[in-house]
Amino acid sequence: GAVVSQHPSRVICKSGTSVKIECRSLDFQATTMFWYRQFPKKSLMLMATSNEGSKATYEQGVEKDKFLINHASLTLSTLTVTSAHPEDSSFYICSAPRPRGISNYGYTFGSGTRLTVV
Amino acid sequence: GESVGLHLPTLSVQEGDNSIINCAYSNSASDYFIWYKQESGKGPQFIIDIRSNMDKRQGQRVTVLLNKTVKHLSLQIAATQPGDSAVYFCAENMGDLSEKLVFGKGTKLTVNP
Image (cartoon, rainbow over the protein chains, first blue to last red):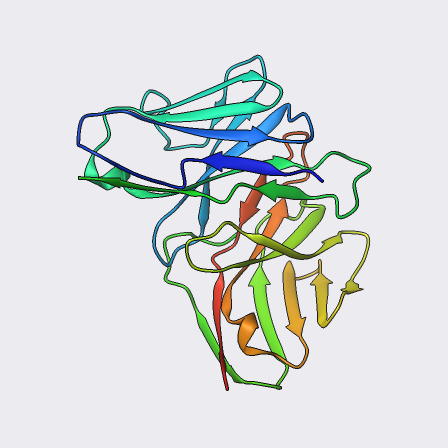
């Protein structure tokens, strides 16, 4: 249990366009989700905490107008990369805390989205 | 976790040997730690976790050791197999109500047949 589905897995877009990435909790409700960014051969960097029904909390240095996060329901958080540029090309991963009571309490991760901006 | 700006350290072992991957964490208030394995192009895969009230926890072929005095975490993999080749990350829960999980810089493990 506690599966997170992330979509799309890969996306290529032109500079200046916006891209939306979805993260869905399939069999549990997630009031909180986390968005990470990962550059090649680097670690996962926490970008923001997505909170259901309220504004996201962004980590220092992350542009909130650039990376729009919406968490409108208990099962869906979206990250929109606005006016994308080549430097936004990266691997984006979402995560949600597993519900307490499920074995291996921890976090469940989406499979990631490879964004390439050309 | 450590700086995400550094390149991944690497560890190369022979198949069948034991592997030890180390991690230094940053926040003395962190109370929950997890080791993840990540293969290329995929999301992190849970390996084992440990709470701050423990100093050792064992799983199948894996052991995590926690030394809170020096803020150090290690992952031991017994009888390493080629399928263990991946990047391994430690992650810490910051110990506050946010439930944020912060990743360390990772180690690339290569298992030679």
